[in-house]
Amino acid sequence: MPTIKPVFHHATFKTSRLQEMIDWYKKVIGVTVTFQDANNAWTTNDAANHRIAFLMVPELSDDPEKVRHNGLHHTAFEYDSFDDLMASYERMRDEEGIMPAFSLHHGLTISIYYRDPEGNYVELQSDAFGDWAKSTEWMRTSEDFRGNPIGTFFDPQKVLEAHRGGRSFEALSPAMRQGDFVPDAIPNIGLPEPEAVTRGL
Image 1 (cartoon, rainbow, N blue to C red):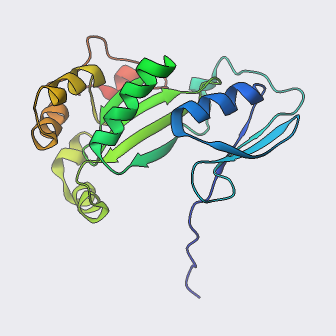
Image 2: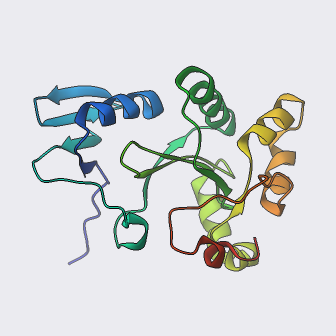
């Protein structure tokens, strides 16, 4: 019998900062609360009944060694365009004071990562090809991706300034991938020994 493939519906976080987490996800991905009580909340940013849920129970605490432990690295949300991604970066920087943890051109996506109040990463991305079929084929067959699957760091402010200065996405994307907009300092990407992961980028 063939596998019936379900569509991904939601992610649920254990938290000790219920309202802070709700407020942060409102600012970053525009969630609204479908239902909330003293210890739980179910939120959505589209027509689904919920996409991000939070459960607050006694005895939860922060993990100071989270980076070194198995677990989810990030959730990801996709914009329709590079322009929307950069506009959201600018809005969060200017209106919310929320800055990226790091940014990577993965080849198939342009991705800006943020850390929520409990240290979980959220990736905001746009497809580098504007077409899932094309980016999937590139991912499957590209020697570029085979040689650099993690991606090339970029400074989103430098990219935004270049884009606002008239450089098209078609010109910016390969320049980002080849390292023309690398930040002044290479950030930690939430893994042990990030230099080993990103060596050669």
